[in-house]
Length: 79
Image (tube, rainbow, N blue to C red; front, side, top):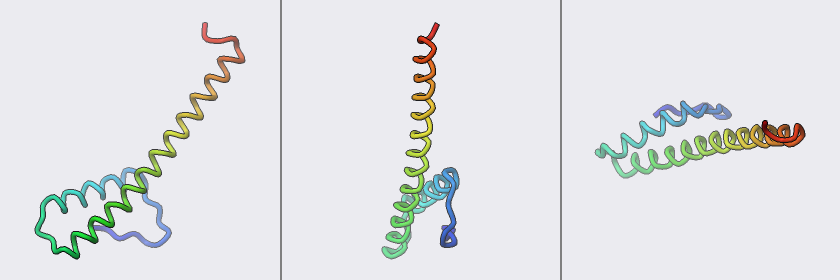
């Protein structure tokens, strides 16, 4: 598990890939309770990062679609 420098922003793909690794390690078992808890906590952090990126992407898509709809409305609708 790669620890990030304070203030470092993970990209979506990096966070997702690390989350997949965390899940694999938890599913494999063999970790102590303390290690498992640390992995779970890291997984929660990574899931939040992924959720943040996905929500941002959704907002950008919604804004683009709304702008497209507004443009069509100004032009009298699709032909």
